[in-house]
Amino acid sequence: MEETLVAKQIWVVDDEALIRTAVIAVLNELGYETRGFGNAEELYVALVEGGAATPDLLVLDQRLPDEFGSTIVHSLRERPQYRDIPVLFVTAIDDEEADRLSALAPVIRKPFDFADFITAVETQLATAPQS
Image (cartoon, rainbow, N blue to C red; front, top):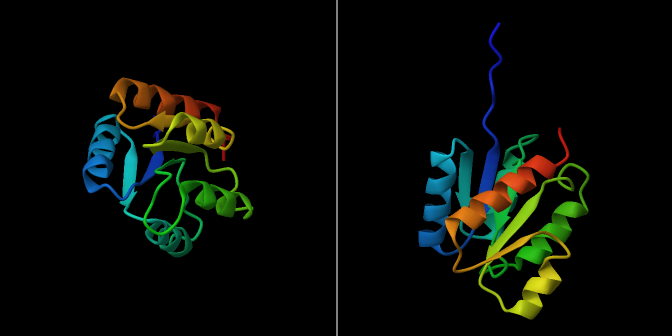
């Protein structure tokens, strides 16, 4: 009997449509299922409407128009159903802010090399708690 592999779900939250689209295209090419959101509100709506469906990884910009990515992470970690969702920040920030954010989740700074991004995604997925 063949085992069916289910593609990992990666959700990308970035207000820059060009970056969001490029990241999603790369992830899709690698076989991941993706969803994209332009702000925090869209993410929260998807989580609530999705019921039990949650991403296997959240790729998150720090500077969104309606909320900081770090605030999203804190909010998710306060809720048992979302606290174990791994996060990868992909954002344009300075060294000091990157150091601060790295206490919450790994940080890839824009502009970035897609090889580094892919390595970070694979690392986050490999070290995430299994559901």
